[in-house]
Image 1 (cartoon, one colour):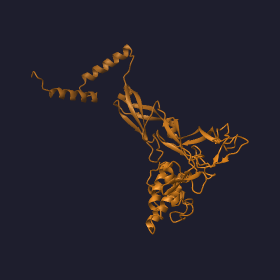
Image 2 (cartoon, one colour; image 1 turned 60 degrees about the horizontal axis):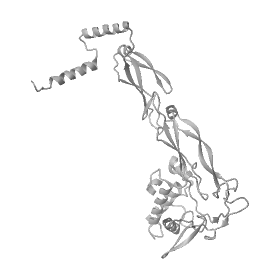
Image 3 (cartoon, helix red, strand yellow; image 1 turned 30 degrees about the vertical axis):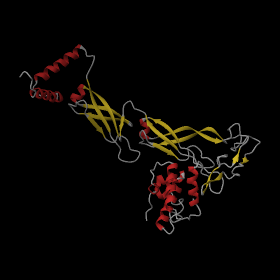
Image 4 (cartoon, helix red, strand yellow; image 1 turned 90 degrees about the vertical axis):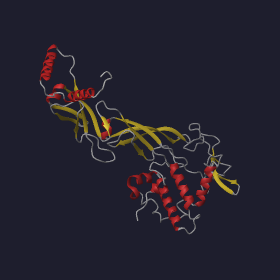
Length: 385
């Protein structure tokens, strides 16, 4: 039987944040946990499905593999599917979920059995501007982004050299405390140490007691061919580092394509405007037009009108998400000559005279427009008639 999509199981979109995933999983766990549905096999199955989906999607590496390869990318590491694993091992039981929910309500959320909780690092966003050529053909860029590294002065402990962190007297090093709320005993993060289980009385002067200092790191980013403005490239685990050993966030590189002096992009097609002389438009000929991978010849038939669009097949963009390669659409603009010599003016006047004497229509658009104007005025009724 085919497995259901993990995002559908949790009822979230594919770009759901860690917080969205967590909320969705809590809701389903509270609803379908076997402790609340004794003897209900369907509820037990739904709980197992939700648990498996959350275990995969909450892990950046597993989520990246699932997004790219589906279930085949995570079947070896997802815990054996809904039928594998019990409730007492490998996942949160009902008391975990219950205390976690109430811990958030009252400002905490401590881990079970003591110790500080791990938090996933924040995602980062980097805006990269590329040329149209780079967007169409693909490019690899080197970028530098801010990050946090272990403080060398205190080796990440946060305590000044020569001193050590002390056990928190409030939580006795567990990182969480229990608060009585009426009939309920609620476990939440220790307000004094913030869940670390330790107090730093003499903080490191270099990092201020954080154990981390700002730095920069260099990354190689491959921009695939066919990207467009607004597309994002996700680099898993390259965001801000997590807290208390939690996983790092992701880095999202947002692509912005710089405007081009010749071409504009229209989906998979490229468009450009080609100036053509009056004589070439009237008599026909061949002209060279640019493409992103060289020049091609374009035949202009006699009598070509300004605004006519010619299609050069296969000279557009290959979409990044697949599909046929687009075309190059060349729009002809017939240019009126300027700065004419006296002789050139005489020749044009002679041409105009021959066109007027000849009864045939040599200006199809002009003739059609004049016919429309004549019919318009013939149909009008003036007040003095």
